[in-house]
Length: 175
Length: 294
Image (cartoon, rainbow over all chains, first blue to last red; front, side, top):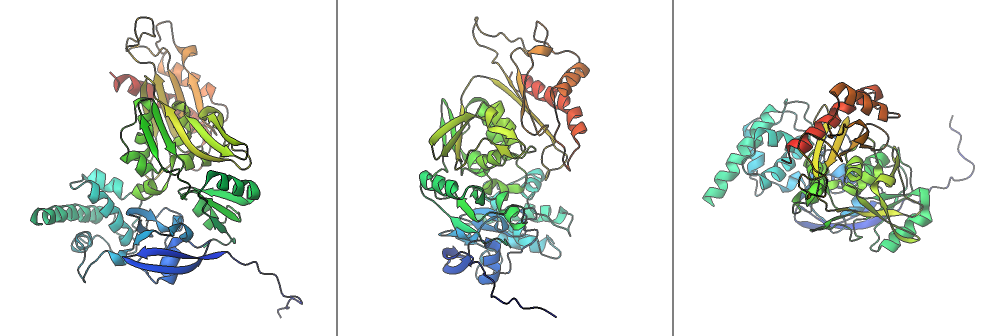
């Protein structure tokens, strides 16, 4: 039998705030607690479930998003620090129902199996190919060092990144 | 999820940040890039009520001048890599930034100053700052103060930050020197097990200066990192002969091992292993200083 406390227990109010940010090109405002992680707000409040919560320790990279143009692990970011930030999640990468070239390359080359890590791999790849249009395998593996995959053994991911580089170079040539 | 009822502060003035830190003392933590603090809060290892976020403090600039560099507290490793090349041995900071584990995400989030303030013995940054004779810029209730990196790192995870103080930047003066760096780690995603930064006098310093033939190491100073709870700075003079030459490898290794009081011991490597490899790592850094600067 559970005994009820005779007096109501004091529950400390958890500090919270409104945070305004632009997510996938759309301005939004969310009410969140100061202790909330960005990954929690993206998934639970904005319902952007493509940002995966893995280790919550900064190791696995599954929660990677672009934050003001840079890849970050959103489990390492307090949502309160995102005030005014521009954020792109995996839901904002494809346009008009068409996969972007990096996504397409992962699809074509079996760059994933279960798919849990793939959003993070995509953002790490985008960062790499924006700086190096023809990366070596070593550079590819180095760029993906912050993303852990338990399925593929990485080889098909490396092949996907290589294919994405070719696709992006071809795209630039024709535009 | 972080279970404590954190309050997030984003001061825009250093004085405001200092006042918050002073008021909340051990119940407050400074948030830089967040790569160490945020997961430690998530794991429940840190228990604080206030987080002082430096993001809006205006300490996110890298200043590169002929006489040295200044790096603000919020400068990330990616920012360092994108900056113009640092003069002289200070370029080691950019080299280290390129080798930080955790991939581009951590390089875009983590900061040199955050790593310095965290003072993990296995981190590369403390020993590199000591090797470069960096100056730490601190602000506290009493105003600004500077301290050399060699005096900043006190123990494992312990630095010379007084109540209400925060680290706002580091600076490294330009100087003529040759540099060699060697890092031992066993996996890309691993912290280093041992590092050595060798700083040697320049080859051409004029007839009245320190001559250097290329075979000796006169004037060499090597800073070992990840070996002990704090960086170990070694002046090699006691083991060099009159021509500046080293004794046998075994004698060097024995001498280096004897300079290490209590080696750092963690899940990556036992202290005895670190003591054993310290001499090898030191010799390789010296060799690189000689070979890479000819």
